[in-house]
Amino acid sequence: MPRQTIVIDPVTRIEGHSKISLHLDEEGHVEEAYFHVTQFRGFEKFCEGRPFYEMPSLMARICGICPVSHLIASAKACDAILAVRIPEGAVRLRKVLNLAQILQSHALSFFYLSVPDLLLGMDSDPATRNVFGVMETNPAMARDGVRLRQFGQQIIEWLAGKRIHPAWVVPGGVSSPLTAENRDRILAGIPEALAIATRALDWFKTEIERFREEIRCFANFPTLFMGLVGDDGTLEHYSGKLRFLDAGGHVVADYADTSYPDYLAEIAHPWSYLKTSFYKPLGYPDGVYRVGPLARLNVIDGISTPRASQEWAEFRELDRGAVLSSFYYHYARLIEIVYALEKIEQLLHDSDALDSNVRAHASVNNSEGIGVSEAPRGTLMHHYKVDRDGLITWANLIIATGHNNAAMNRGVLQVARHFVHGNKLTEGMLNRVEAVIRCFDPCLSCSTHADGRLALEVELRSHQGELVDVCRTR
Image (cartoon, rainbow, N blue to C red; front, top):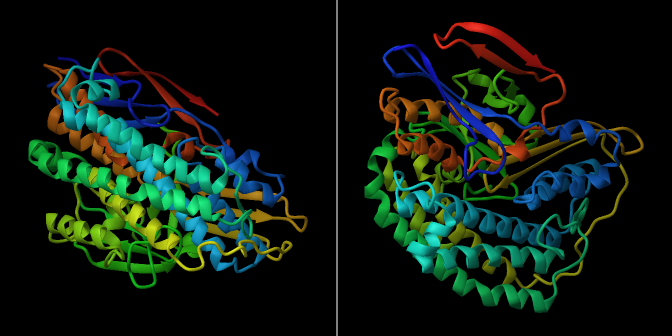
């Protein structure tokens, strides 16, 4: 048979626009596979010339699902430009807001985007393999997912004034303190949310045996892992040091989070608008690494909250070194949901939770600032340079999905080679190719910010696989 190309367009149940192309040889075996991110947005360029103090609110507009993540990283970069140490009360409230973001986004990823595969099966009818099918098959689980995400969004609204694109996080801290009424509202909702998270975690652990084949080949290979850890090595999403861990579970290095240009680099590929990051000391492709909930649970030495710590200890029994299968991103998300709820409760029980000192004021004192935090999908980096008037002259954004790009492409190839056979295609085969991408929960509109020099190459091939023409967009 002639060489074939199978195109999955669009990839479904992810945020943003993409497609996957599978290139088959004459015998119908997968020879190569590519994950194409087809949208381009260019935030790095059109923020140039804007006052730096606008950046948190402007950057929040990158995404409607994780605007808080961009608020936090952007504001931290602006704090560095001001050269201020923000009040402890502001740090505490930013942490609560970021954890609420992780809670609602993880609930969306697990219950809305991934449970249709996990509950109904990878081979189920695509017409019902969605959130509506979940509602019909298991109404209680569907309600749990809606309620858990709602609670995360409510926390954001009670803290920051609105659920989507709040402007509450500002350079130097936050714009207003927490009220006693809103603190009590949040604390009152935590027991119900923890019960939901515990039910979901218990259910997922009973389902793992059904997916042993997927676990073996869903981006299951040795890579580095990167994530923030606290000064004591525990799970951290707001600040700390960046740790790299190898596949054997050994710490490669700990770095200051603001020194990322010393150890990370980015490259562009002709088939995608999404850049790829790699660990510079090992080069590309040896320096491929993963970020996000799986990476965070791999790189840490422990968790500071009781229930999540117990679940993490059980999770780490999956492998002798790092947990390598990306299928376990789902597992890690659920553990992080438990942690987020416990940690929010701890932070709000602090005696200074209602501290009114939540903002430091200053003028431009540095010409450059870097802000790093953990978004739901992984490490988020904002890097700005300003002129003497505080106007942005240059910006670089490294998004979690860019950190994971190389691993996602390798994962697509691994899954396709295992499941896809060109002489007898089934919808379930192709769904598994998409499902490996859903494990990473990519946010494509967050991540496609390369400047105008990046080109997309489109190849026209004959039915025999011969290259007929090439078009490059600029």
